[in-house]
Picture 1 (cartoon, helix red, strand yellow):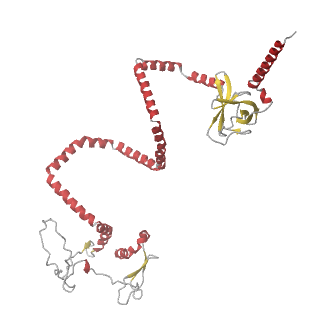
Picture 2 (tube, helix red, strand yellow):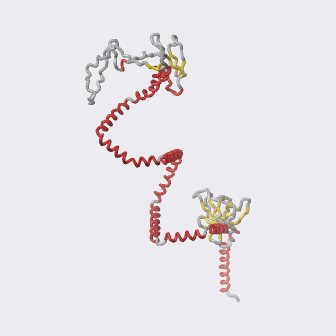
Picture 3 (tube, one colour):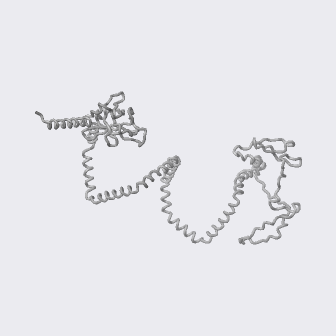
Length: 429
């Protein structure tokens, strides 16, 4: 007869067995999923399976979060259904699904690698298109065998022998290089922020280089031209270098022998330069008009009808008017060799009337009578008129002389009024 104690023991054993079977079924056989579902499904679209299988583990940053429920063949590849536990509901939707191998013998799994740290997040029915599969083991071995087989054994043997000879007895030096490399890495790590800032600032420099690439290309092209010319003049440059010492000695001797004269020359050149700079506008005017005057000077040459030769008749026309001396009595004459500075007398001018002598000074220049209303009077001499809008010049008074229209040169642009001065000179030629 079964005693009460035995019955209690059997009941306790049955309860323990039931609890163990329940835990084992729920933990390993996942029988609890048959009663209630505590996961959501995400579909990853792969071009090929990559060796993944139903039941494979799904990890997120190295932590198991679910499993592969099934694989579905499609026209474009394979759809892998991932069952992820509900507690992992903060996985970014921008995630990459990578099929990996835990070991060389296989055991593939799916690793979810987020590309961002915030939402939106994966949910039931979400799809992942950013996927990757590992290289097939058979393809890797085949490529490796092909690479090894392509290496020339004799050349490889020679390379190994030469490397052995090169590094023989250099153990201490290699150790020093490694230690120095470690120190360099430690220093770089200590200055990581500085290095990062340098790399970020390099973008600005590189962007500037990109913006000026046309100028850099032009500089490179001109540099190539200069280098080519320099290479072509190699022989001449060698002669210059060979004779440079002799020429330098000659120049030094010349400067030593003419030290005082060269100093005076430089001082005079400085003075002359100051005068030229002060009158640069007038010199520019002379340089512009001189070619025209030179061309017009050839018109004084005429052909002699007797001997057929070209002759020119040049004479000096002197006026009989006495030069003005009145008003200059207070000025003091001095020798041209006297170069001392003195104050410029600004109150001196010609005080004689024009009927007595030739007046001097800018105040006595002939001037056109000012026409304030823009309409010429009967007492005013009209030389011509200029139309700014059309650029036409009409010479003479409209009522007394015939009008000859001239068009200003287009190259004058807004300065077309200058044609008033240029046209008479061009006609004289």
